[in-house]
Image 1 (cartoon, one colour):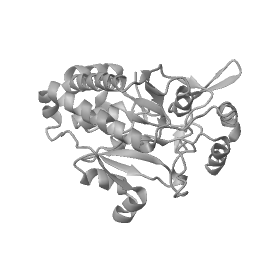
Image 2 (cartoon, one colour; image 1 turned 135 degrees about the horizontal axis):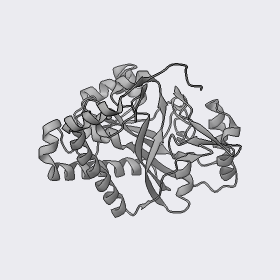
Image 3 (cartoon, one colour; image 1 turned 180 degrees about the horizontal axis):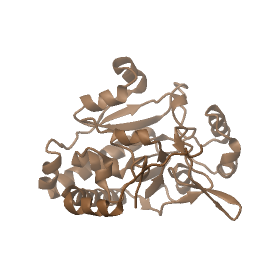
Image 4 (cartoon, one colour; image 1 turned 45 degrees about the horizontal axis):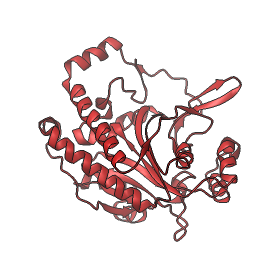
Length: 319
């Protein structure tokens, strides 16, 4: 997809600095965000995970298959994509260590309409993790424990700061409620995700997405072939989706079938398919949790722009 011939709104750099100096919510959000990162890292280390450095450019990245602009660079006659997510690299990474995670910068050049959601930036960070031979249930349980651990510790260490912005924040109870997409559509209609989020007081798992709505790497459910063994975590109080993940396809023929089903070009995944053809890929499951969205939820902020310095809101141009 080519960039449209339209000039986005430019944010004046001096005005931006003055906003940071006047609005203490930026300073407070960074304290909470720093806590989220440190506590998440502590939790995963205690669970036996190994941290690895993020991949910023690659010959392969997440296709996403939605309305975003492509970000790429030419280098000595070859094409690099700027990382939209490290899904492919995670599948290879678990061949080196069984449990891996990374704080991965992602660039997704969203349309300017997404600025109104409160949840979208074009430049953001995911805590990306993957576990060899894991099932969907393993990752969902792990993330419930991580969220409970992080929120519980933040409420103990920064209770007054959190109460200032989000006095109703509670430590959720395990297990989180869950609902299939099929059931959610039946009960709430096409706007099911928004309604579930607004009606809920604790996080909710949304599971079993229709196969045509997700990417080729989420594993097809053998018992219900029109759905996937995947999940989203929906934050309560209207804060929306914050985690996405699931089990992964790892068999060559199935990956090819799924790429074709999505209408993607097999040549774009040549390097990945070579690895799969050799039989190196193993069963795994994992997810990504958006750090800015997690910060926004804990702080009860209106927009993720408030959760970091130099935030890039869709349709805006800034330092």
